[in-house]
Length: 398
Image (cartoon, rainbow, N blue to C red):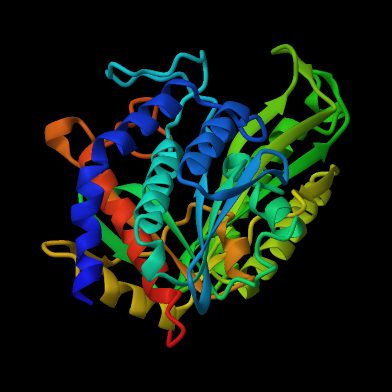
């Protein structure tokens, strides 16, 4: 096991390159399904390492394969490549050069760390048993079909079939350098929905001659909070949020309809199914009570709950704890969604977090903030941890 701890020393040597790659990507962020320049950079770096590379997977996805000289297991390591439609406000020298687009969730660091891990493993390829697949995925931020599903449909988890899969996400809830793991449900299913309340418009001075969809929509919003408060087991984590309301054109005109858009977050598939049914029931029932009609649509193909394999997660924590002076802790579940969940439906594995919270460096703003910043000192640890997990889990005895 001693040789595994050397990964961090080796990662320290390539740290400047990891940081430089991250900064290149950060300055040229690309939205979901548009990651052409990022994919090109990834492809060039992988080919420079001597790896066999496949491009255009599920759109802009990239896969490289490293085959060890001895038989063993197959491990997949994944990084997401897309940015967010946010104007960057962080005070850094390598600020986004694309107006209205920013790597506000750290996907630029995920790509750089996985490329770093690939370099570390290539340097040890003669000692490797089995096979490592490096998956660079588009469109994690899409929230619906995403990028994982198209890559899976294209066969990245087969030929050879993946035995274990791992992913890493930078996290401002954890202190810099802390690695957070959790077996079982770790991230929520993010179900987007739309409720269209259909009434009958008219003059604002004569509401009794109309069916006011704005008033009905307000009652629906209040009533929906009863789904979590009175219809779902209170020990089950559950969030329902209406984030958008659109209706009307003028203050004295009662419109024909109001449109509500929201998100449902659950950590359990049974609760998820029940909550969706109750949202439909409440929206239609309340609307009917006031003479209106409700149409409820949930986005198809939403990400499932991200569920880490308990045994694999425990084993991964034991491996990472071998890195000297590294803090490993059990992380609480979060209600954000993640399409890495789809990879976990194909093979056991774990999705874990790398702490980035460092007030001394201004790394205090949450992911998806326009002021989100990264403590680049942690990137070498992320690269080393991915490489360690790949080398250990490809062991045929694993």
